[in-house]
Image (tube, rainbow, N blue to C red; front, side):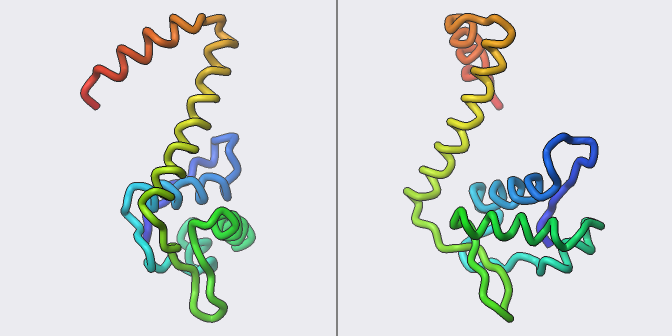
Length: 126
């Protein structure tokens, strides 16, 4: 069973939380090509949510190319070329960076302030 934690207090919809966590498992190699995902019903039961919610997450993952579904067989992690995985990770990073820049601008931070913050965090051992 893959580890998915839902935050019911979050503004992010449950299906998005599921989708993003499965994507992270794929991008970090915790799930690899051919790995079976739990059935929609089993995942819904484990997370104590609606099957419609898990169905939506799985459908989005399939549309984005992360998983493939076979009727009567299940849902599996799609085969990914290393350069495709890197491209996906870059896209995720760019999306995160865009959110950070928008938040910084709302706070009135200047580009130089963000660069200084980036330098500090980049030099830290994480």
